[in-house]
Image 1 (tube, rainbow, N blue to C red):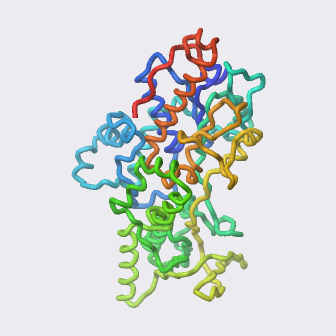
Image 2 (image 1 turned 90 degrees about the vertical axis):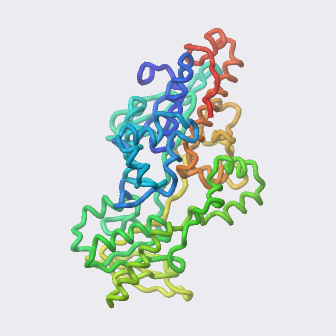
Image 3 (image 1 turned 45 degrees about the vertical axis):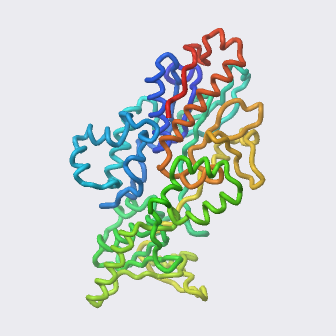
Length: 458
């Protein structure tokens, strides 16, 4: 038997950030709507507790999407897990409306996520890391499952869990400039506040931030405001920061229908998506942040000082450690000259690489089909296309940009995506039940509990 007395879980989620939290909520609401057709689920998270971009909870930073693009509203506007429901439960609904702002602070949105996860926490095993996934020995059509080897946070205790469907949402991987490693003086933006708080601010007199996106600009602003004695260098590969296109027509790229346009589109259509709409999300910054930074630099000019230096057309080419000094090698200007800059800390807000579950899948990876570019082939329901002998569903909640477009790693569509994954699992279970006379005798449910029910309403 597996945890909680289940023989096999219908769904096991790997990772428990916003994507799989949204899936857990969709499953809870499915169970509530179809009480005779329960779907057993478990979510495994290697962190000791819930957390989402904790190290970027900078003062006054706001979300870049509407509060209505929460964990549930687009799938179920009446959901008790919506951001509106959270505000009501927190006693702040009226005040939020009076604020007349579609974009809550990042801190408040994180409070909402924590509030939501607390309501489904009995489905989550924190401090649990999945080491491998493999086919269950002796599997039959009536008992098609994969086996997950799970260790606790210490790496000592281990257990085995079986699942009919696996939903992988392990998040993005921090990306550093080539050849540069993180240490006590060289940070990635994903660890910014943690590393910053370890330092004596008085020792940070020369700091550099590399990157052209929202995180880079926010960290630059934070360091300028928090360290009035410091010189702040913004290392930007372009002519300053570029404004994110968040106009109404451009924002349609994040609409649910745009996923279909991308998935069913031609290669020419997909290329056009990226060519025309990268500036809605990649290496761009909200206008108010850009104007705020420009204003700070202009005010410095008026006072005859220059604490904020924008190093345009410049990239980090390397880092040297000379005694106690950290020397950043910069490749700058049209001629790509190299110069060195001594700093007390370098923050690389250089983005993230897409989630790649290849190592996690291990021996199952050869059963997962790929396209001519070596990327996973995916169904519209976010399930990896697999060889016939692989009857279990493996779903991805990230790393699907090549098939599902811009929103694959963003919050915009997680509510609908979670509903689509639940619908897919329920529909595939019904198909498998129809193929199995043994399961039909059990009432059509793989767990032997009840007959199948309608799909989760969208």
